[in-house]
Image 1 (tube, rainbow, N blue to C red):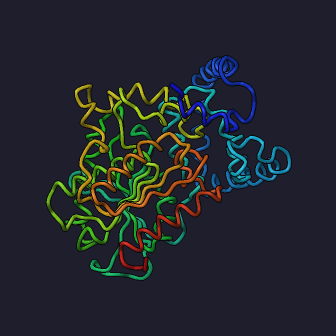
Image 2 (cartoon, rainbow, N blue to C red; image 1 turned 135 degrees about the horizontal axis):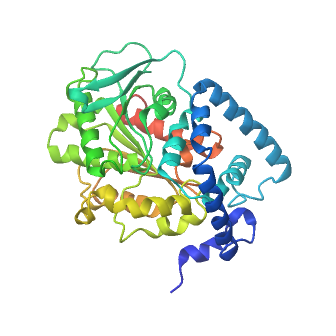
Image 3 (cartoon, rainbow, N blue to C red; image 1 turned 90 degrees about the horizontal axis):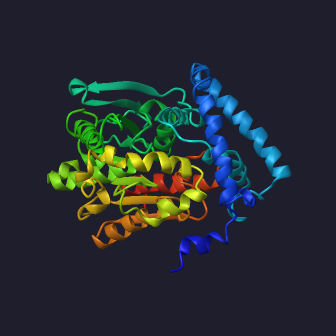
Length: 399
């Protein structure tokens, strides 16, 4: 039987266009493992510490200056020769050359958590916005609330974006997402509440979902910030998209219509965790995905049973397996060549069959969560479409 992924890959410029698939790549990854071992047990912690103690605005300036220099050099030397497809931008080609090498080195929990925290280097917190830490109900409700909606609306007029960070349930945090969440909220014209939740492997996906429900219920029913869920839009990134999807299902199951959000925005959502029956895009597209590489796949998938809280939860843990009837209007974003594409397509089809008002925005040849990489022209259209979807469902913009 012909594997369509293998056939389609013949048309792609995999591995920077170099003839290193198979044995040469395995050799390179073996040497990468040796180098990684020495780095991990010698200077990794001091390097990470030294970088993190720098002010975030300085880290951001260093990152953007370095990127500008690299892009100019790459455009005038390698051009698009390293891109997965010639239709991609110079920016994506330059990003590919930088990020491709990550697949040569093993992934660890500390590296995942450090990397996801550093999103703030690409999206530093905006100046002039009021922020406050949320710690309610004995610590069950935690997060950061940012006032970014223009003017001073009362609780009946306020719009709030309920933000769920991503990180494969193993990493990610609200602190690293503040600037990114603010940038989306400013586009949509609303405040934003970044909900904190427990992560794995110290906890389970069910624990994370419980925290998300507690935070959302507090926001809508107890915070005094909004009058009903119709003033809230739920946004989740990758694994956070899975939590957002689960939250919307829980709202329907609760029977409380006052909790129903105006919309949900699922950015490359990871919604299927059955480790014995993974979708083909997750197993095949790691070969060229820049974010979920072979190294990330090899680290995360073996932890799936632990994240689910045991083998008995294999068929219970995925939101894709539950009914979609009654779920709020939903915007789904994915690349046709990323790891979660197949399950995102299945999610769209299931929602559509259930009568959900759903929009599925796709782009070709891009990596997982491409929409959140600020250097890419390809991401700007997607994020504007997502913000427009929120405004339309809130009634602040016409269709």
